[in-house]
Image (tube, rainbow, N blue to C red; front, top):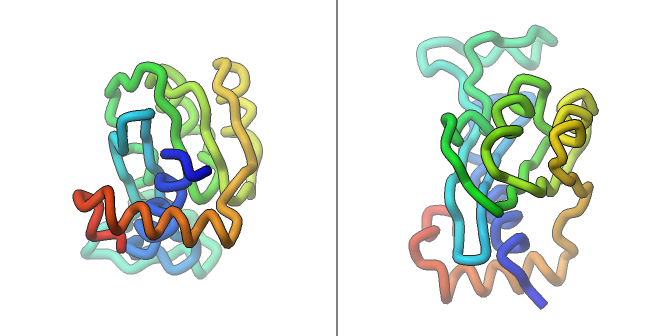
Length: 149
């Protein structure tokens, strides 16, 4: 059965394509049972080229999770295409999000901070069949997210 988390995962995969980072395209989606609350994508400053491919951390990159901007999302969940860094985990901790589904894990320091703050994490993502079903549901029942189709 397809749940809202599956639709959020599909939106995150498709939203990540909008990132202008050449190394790691990251998307974050906060959701609850009623629908999608926020979608964020990592972006570099438009006037500066992405330096990530050169192995240099770009201090000007805007992280996908920063879309929550101190907002409160009680009893909500999130999906993220890459595990959050420590700074993003610090911002997520007081947000009311209680569960985070993660597609890729590169570093675990952010995950450890989430666990310390009683946020459950799952390294879980869409199966091929769930991806097809979620795409169909997204197309026919969630028109407001048409930009991710």
